[in-house]
Image 1: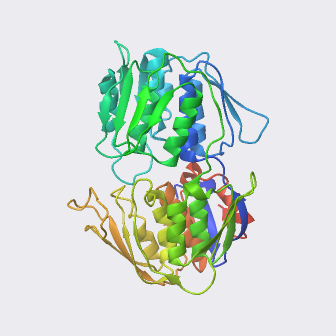
Image 2: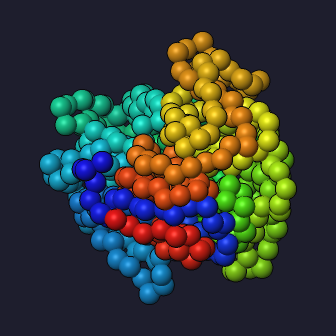
Image 3: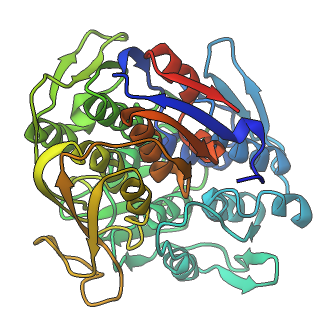
Amino acid sequence: MTNYDAGDVLTVHGGAPLNGELRVRGAKNLVSKAMVAAVLGETPSTLFDVPAIRDVEVVTGLLELHGVTVTRGPLDGELHFDTSDVESANVDEINVHAGSSRIPILFCGPLLHRLGHAFIPDLGGCNIGGRPIDFHIQALREFGAVVEKSEKGMDITAPNGLHGAKLQLPYPSVGATEQILLTAVRAEGVTELRNAAVEPEIIDLICVLQKMGAIIKVHTDRVIEIQGVPRLTGYTHRPIPDRIEAASWGAAALATRGDVFVRGARQADMMTFLNLFTSVGGAFEIDDTPGVGGIRFWHPGGELNAVAMETDVHPGFMTDWQQPMVVALTQARGLSIVHETVYERRLGYTAALNQMGATIQTYRECLGGTPCRFGRRNFMHSAVIAGPSKLHAADLVIPDLRAGFSHLIAALAAEGTSRVYGVKLIQRGYEDFEGKLNGLGAHVELG
């Protein structure tokens, strides 16, 4: 615990309900990709409602290394991108960002179109299971790219240009779908992508690209068709709100028996979450007032209900919603079952919850009917939660972004004072979470 500086440790005095309101801004999983998409445009782009999170800082740094001028506009969260002087970046400077984010892989297509060359450093991100880049590399090769691996990363060129291709993903990977979209929009000819991811953030990225002049058709059965165009212009875009952050605060309200209004949250993006939230025994209310509306989440009193929950790709229950909700399920009466089908190592965080008094047993078997890639492999990807459990304070070390917020919720719900180490990881995806917690009446302080 001695390796953490004061700004990376949060002291949490738990046992009090969260009450009040906060605001979520643009979705982390769209904003960073829209920033990369700006490189494709030959004129400036503007993005509104950008959250002040670590991932945005990383992408800003990568853009500036490649000659993009990034400036703040007059509105809070407004960013401008001038891409008129895109250039190759120094390998050592790019490697400063190696290990801090997985976003660099998405620069491949845009840089190949603008410069004919891309260098991608070793990738980081959360350690929650296999997130292979082989989907990305194979797709780039299908477009005509030449990929050469080196000690520091990958050198990628396109000596004969990029050309449309017929592609089918073995799994509807969000990252691989984004890679293909960002590459296909300026590749010569037509690209057909089958088994594509269709998450709301993917559709919003398609909206960004269409504003830039791309021709993209979203067909039924996860088929996306892209007609390549010779040039793209910049965009002006306001992203969809962050449905992961909104759900995280909803789960926190439920786990702490609180009442939280999440301004900016949108029902259409969260219907699957809201269904489960209601089944567990939570209550919600939608405010559709333009510009100031959102979703109110609260614990209506009484006991919560045990449920069976399976994660899946959209429109299923999002894997990033699973961890915050499991904390709430520790307070439900009976046996809840969780089947994680997206990331094979995503249940590792439950050991810390057991340390705090929860009763969670993990299993290798598939405890659910959703098709799963992990059932015959040695991964603890299902869990049974027995509740309700009285949580008590503990010292916690954050393993990854979403598990980190779940540990934070558990500390808030527990009696006593917890110390949470590694909270800078939470800053990758949650803007000003300490300030928001204080605004909800939580008793927390850094250091």
